[in-house]
Length: 124
Image 1 (tube, one colour):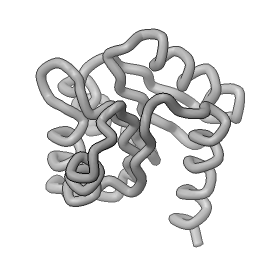
Image 2: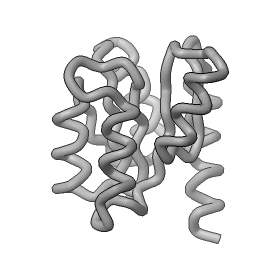
Image 3: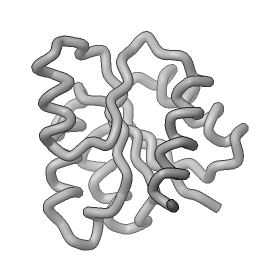
């Protein structure tokens, strides 16, 4: 089963994303901050991480950079999920190493589709 890490400090969004991913057949690790996301990514080695940019402590951008810098976690696929929609925010997400960037408000169905597409491309 594919494991997906979801990190968002907004409990409603975190629960919604986790629920939709579980419905789609994924195993989900849901956490509320960047430090816990980093620890879970290192210990559980998910296939993919969905990271909110704005979280207390470590931001999603910080977590993304740290995962990319560590050979043990560099292969984890990363989608940024954020309300930060300015062009420089999107560029910052991609330059930190994100594989995709989804802005809030978002369609949970579209997010699941983008995750599935990213996983398919990674397997090919």
